[in-house]
Length: 238
Image 1 (cartoon, rainbow, N blue to C red):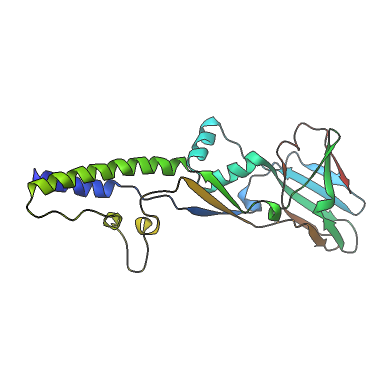
Image 2: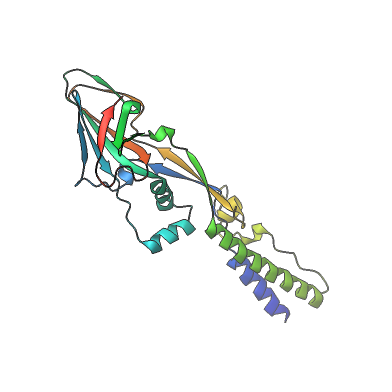
């Protein structure tokens, strides 16, 4: 009986799952997305041509459910952005033989007698907090394992004159090396109920941009969800 309980303890120690990290960083750039180059939105002005491409973040109901469950990955971070914004790649070509100033805050989308402004990535919240279903599931599993370990320890104490050492979270470490934290050491075995995603935006179109003669400047911009669909789109400057 004693050998069986010891084997059970060892098995339970190994079976605990390391916690999800409290925060992950997601790098957002032009290359992060697939862009719909076949259906550009073009707006020609006196000194420039503005071309806008919508991002293509396709999926199905099963993948959407999965990435709401696994919130600590890059795809889930992109899905979250696409649920709240239309993500666009904007290219501004300077037609003039001298540099021009392009001000994103003055570019407006006109639709159904309403105007909407484009949003620079720098004006998007850099951190978001979402409920972490995967982490909660891990917590439930690990709690069951800990309860089983506790019961096994109590049974072993009754069967032995000297009480065994109760396993701690550091006992779950199996592959740490000197000076390097493994998952258990870094995150423990219990996840936060909420996960934070930190967005790092690259390839930005800023509010104010200088574009040299006969050259392009491109980058990511956002607009409120659904404003670029269903046609009847016009552009204007303030």
